[in-house]
Length: 216
Image (cartoon, rainbow, N blue to C red; front, side, top):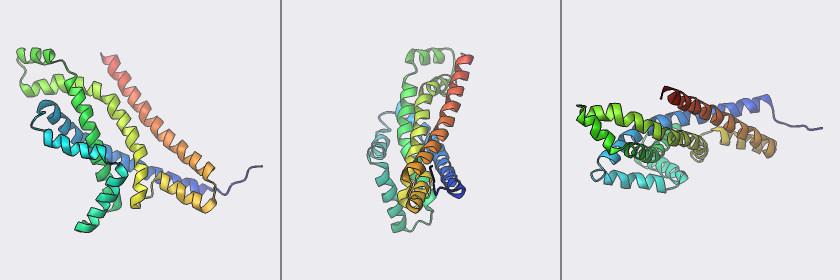
């Protein structure tokens, strides 16, 4: 007969950690999407002028996320910034997300045929009307699958914030494992929670894509 020391309170503790994971993911995606959209348009429309921006973003894409968390958290203490570890996690994840989403947006914008843009301008649309009504809608459909994969990746990367003291889902599971010494059970439950959260995001994305196809 199987017995376990895992209790209802332990499950609630894991769910509290999952809620922190979702909050970190939400704010990181909001910050990263807004910044990445702006940066991606700059990289696509002004490639030479935005080269310094590209070099900076390359740094955030190249340096492991764990190192970014530790460095930013240490820098916060050195300069005396009075912000919480949660805010640090959101900022670092947001910048990391923006660095990747910039390239997704750039690829989406560049996928719009130049002949189509020329045709829209010949019909009397201004430069910004061309961006608003032609380029962005088409680029969005191209970029959306990459953005959705980025969301799922960021959700898993939130596990690294445990190194700066934030109790998210993985940190909560490790705390329970230390107490009851049942790693297989606890990590299976934590993995199931990650799966369910990712599945919900993936299904919402699939529904949105299906609706776009219906409107074509």
